[in-house]
Length: 246
Image 1 (tube, one colour):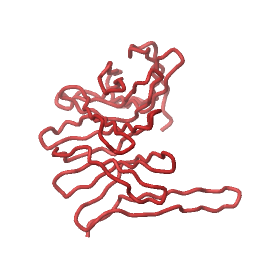
Image 2 (tube, one colour):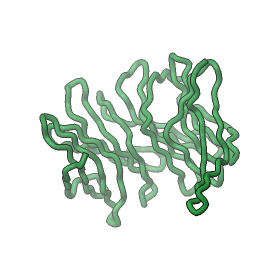
Image 3 (cartoon, helix red, strand yellow):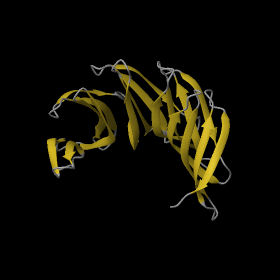
Image 4 (cartoon, one colour):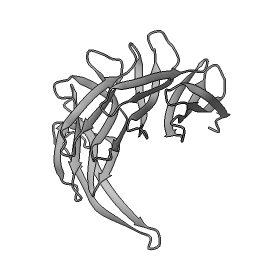
């Protein structure tokens, strides 16, 4: 029997009473496919968008699923139908638009291309795929870590990009896309001999961004926390390095 990991548990804890309530606890799967789940569930009006999929051992089918308040699947939509995807990364992110649409992003690779890409999918409230697009630098491993909505109605996606063929260090990888998925700009930032990964972002009042991440120095150097300030076009304004405590 295959193992099942496609389960959702929602709890509400009341500190004063020391009690925990389980609203539902369900496991989805069968005896044929291995089921997995990405690390994202989004609440929308007591319904839950869940992002995961299943594998038959040769390929992976990613899905967007909508669950009702009791955990019953209302519908699920494959986002890579007809593609031979053989790998995925559990770093994923999702957000709701003001109009109730869902934007979902994750990293994956295929049988014909072992280099990972970043995919972004936009779906309607009914689960219809409005568009899906792939992003990433040519001949690079590109990894997603986070996505935020911006004040101008667009999206900022951050992570890392690495040229494994030429044994280069990983760099901050940032890209801004429009509401229609079109690329507005993309940037990389690197600091010497070490792997740099962007992990979080916040928009600043001037329309720019603060990017947080880490820099792992090679050759015995200390690990550093990194804060990068960029303007609205992705140009660096300043950076701050601080020793990591771990």
